[in-house]
Image 1: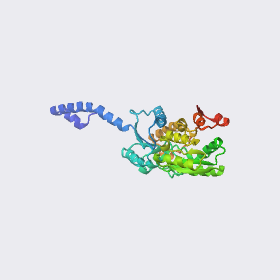
Image 2: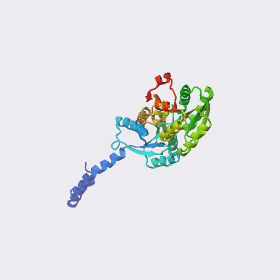
Image 3: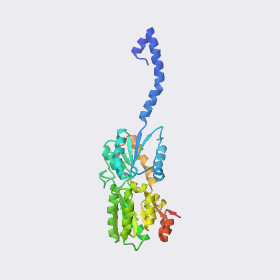
Image 4: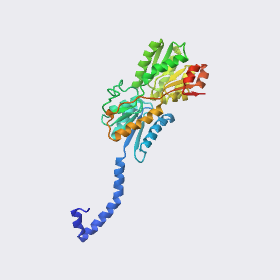
Length: 341
């Protein structure tokens, strides 16, 4: 419908020519305007990861993106992703989180406890969804798992809760070991929680835990030499995105120093560590888009309970066992989800 001013212009010769030019220009501009409006409606999701974009880590994020596509969010068409990697350097996280806030992303999805902490520090309004991370209650990120409140929710691995199970499995492999080394990332709240839980579990089992706080990859050689000097009989590696980046190096050093090693995810065992027991992270990342979808549809993150993992994997690397001269108990092999030969 033409407004009264437009109608008046149509009855004036000069106005009619101006109207036709305006109309033609408007028709040319309309697709551009519509395109601009469509771009504005496409949600932008910030992906903030403490680790590095190696193939194993990318596989987790691909599981996230696949589930997003199943929910109708196709990158480049109905959603845009802003990816930021800290490459295991915790000092980079605050700047990366601030950059995502400056871009006014709709949601920030985080990988690793330090990334969640950095995002929470950077914004109290943009929704944050954790894809991985240690107990957010213990870290002060949320008051409770059932009612997180605020702008943060998502998945928690509750890594510290698995430490007793990992130590028990390591004891099955090394029944005579009285000292076990623990490698943990002091930059990560999850690492500190794991250290505390492992020491408590060790006390109950009568195992002395020798804890080594590793905050930089340059400290690995010194730490492994110290473990040998301290006569550790085995090694437990607490979960850390920084350690994940360095998992092949950790496996090589453990083999060099003859340390049977227990780790928290299959990717470490695939890289050469002896045994892994922990969360199925591909499954974890596939569950995250449900949070993203609900928030984009209007749900408040504080009303969405933090969920825990439901799938766990035991992986044994027989090649490494052979190199260490160890015989894996048949009872343990029978419970394994995967045996690497």
